[in-house]
Image (cartoon, rainbow, N blue to C red; front, side):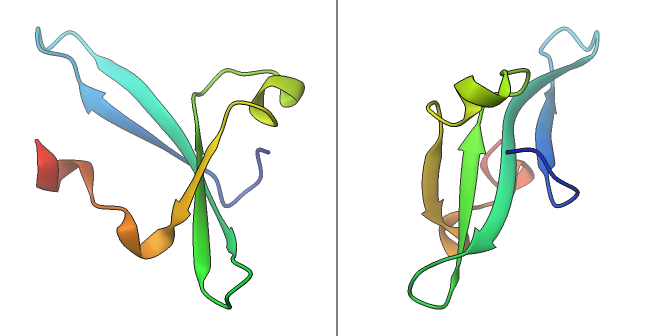
Length: 68
C-alpha cells in the first residue's frame, strides 16, 4: 500500500526523547467521487498492510496538533 502519496503521522513522546510513529495514511479516490484515507500501522509487510487497515472519508480526519 505504500506509494509517494503516503504520509506517516508522528508525535513527540512524553519524555521528549524522540517521536513515535502512529499511523501511515494514504489518500485515494472514493466510490462517491470524494476522497478516502486508508490508515494502517507503519512497518507492516505488504500482505499485512492489505488486511490491517481502516478506511475513512478524508474530510473526517483532523490534524494531530488539533487533538493534543
